[in-house]
Length: 539
Image (cartoon, rainbow, N blue to C red; front, side):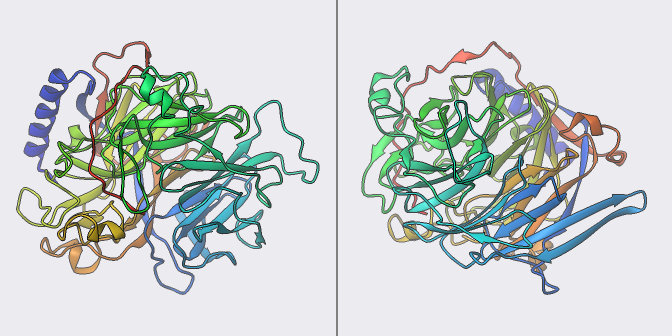
């Protein structure tokens, strides 16, 4: 990663750019790190590492257990922290539905502790749930009618008032299943704890989905959104939120399984009636580069946060050469948003992927992302760093304790890259649809994940694509995907009552603190349609 001098130069450059582009509103200073982190290799249950890209995880607060899922496995991880150190017990608890399929999702309802394993089949999914952190599993119907094809998400939380009748179940929470069909996305809700689901309802791209959008054409198109979405989250009041990769984009046809809208900016689709209707809200000053999903969560003060990869492509045929991890918040369920804050540029990072966000107590949240100091097109082979060797990627975590006004970003893999080279986000089938030099490194797949335990310890799931000779040989490109968990090991977490109880951050641990230079009151979502983006992705 950059030397101290290079990092200072990057910091100065980012401040100049902030002055020229006030929507980025970035200010940054070198600061003491508020937390420290430790990385763990996830076990496959047979004395070896688990592997599989796009990991997801849940945390069961009743059993104080992490359930880590990727590909066709589930691993239960139980940490025990004492004065003598931390121990970890790992057990293979793979569900009967944990088979190698198109996409895998693991989710735990933080209010009940119920964990779901979901494996995409296309028209539906294989799904099981566990109420004992994976010791036993119950198979379910897997999906609802009209929730088909790709990139599914499973989530859940309290029902929104008025609570619908569900006489066949004593399970207290709603369970959601969402998927995208190549043009838009639908979500179905379960009233019986995930055993069965009702019909899917469109969350974007129908005339009822964006009635309040300030752009009449975008309103008529239901938001003009990409079908691809991130992980659904449900607030304590039962409001459901699905992050949408890009809305306000331009229609693009014949893009394989995703004939949809491209470009625009990150948005969220919101339901206040248990999944019956959905309304799209866009984030002003934000840009969608048609690569990584965005991510949302709510703190205990009901502040909604969103993190995304911010970048643009200059034309149909030219890919962007820079992107940033950015974050904003909303205090009115996504209707209005704060100014975006850049988390990555100040640390000398010029391209990012896989932003994921989790929130805790009021005013506290964390964002994880991978980033590189390389400038260039990270979706094609030949993506190199300043030394002309394959670009080096690290995992970063940013923390806020004042509601998103200030963030401190830390490199949590400073001595061990997570990838060298490019990171293909366009989907395997697009290789034959565009050109022959698309990135050949699809090892990390589509996303990472992040959650928090009951003590406020951040838990980040990611894939390590750089192992063996790749770690120290700058010319060796990343391949494979070893499952990894990064855990907050000391310092200030996301639950205030454990401040000062999670251990001391080692002396000299540093980060970069970013903030909005002009943190203005929340502004109305007045944003225009973004330019055309190339037809780029199938998942």
